[in-house]
Image (cartoon, rainbow, N blue to C red; front, top):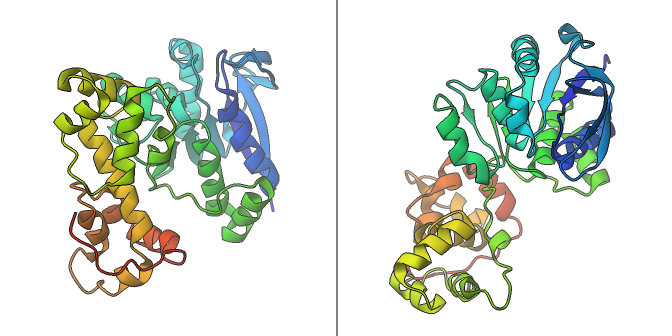
Length: 325
């Protein structure tokens, strides 16, 4: 089988894991020839000062041989977006390759190259609002780990690039090869693209003295309870206005959004596949678990019902009758 040519685009201040993680996935899969490209060939420093050798500069690359263009992200992406020659090369190459894949904030470089208009994309949750402002033609969905829109695949932050790379390997070589890579690298066998990148456990470990810790613990302990802003602000010992600002700044979502998120993930843990399958004849039955947890937004339940059934069903224990939350 002919090897597929993958080119990773880096720049000063790139995020090293955006490069190394997907690179290792493809290298372990076999059937790929990976190379690193920068504005000029030579050493390029990541944001963490890890130096990486770029084997090619944009003047050396032959874009007609590239199968997949992978654009990494990082703190230096804003400067990279202002580099007209680099942006022009990315735009020309993206138009000719089979597949285009930004990792994390690498999507901004593709935005500067005019690739995102009319496309559904994702990025790291922290940069989503900025992406919407700077590239209003893009359809930004902050929730998924990765998104495919035709030949454009985008991913959320940092480690999600490895999930995306594994999905690309599966698309190219099949499930068995992708699972072999996952086992070798000790990755999730399947952390689906539809799974929220803002998983509740990420926010559950806060310092002992943090006033938001009590709020996080209270909501997680009883997702179905009445969690009004007033009640949660009282728990945190803050005014409602200050609590709203603090929650949004530190957790990336307001109090109501956090409660909704906890309830949605609680639904995923509580309702097994057998319970859902028994109700498949009803319209909208696949979203029932989220509704029963009190979630107003059914999110990934509606978009990815088979994913939820496959992931949670075999390991879940039927909870029996539960009150409506």
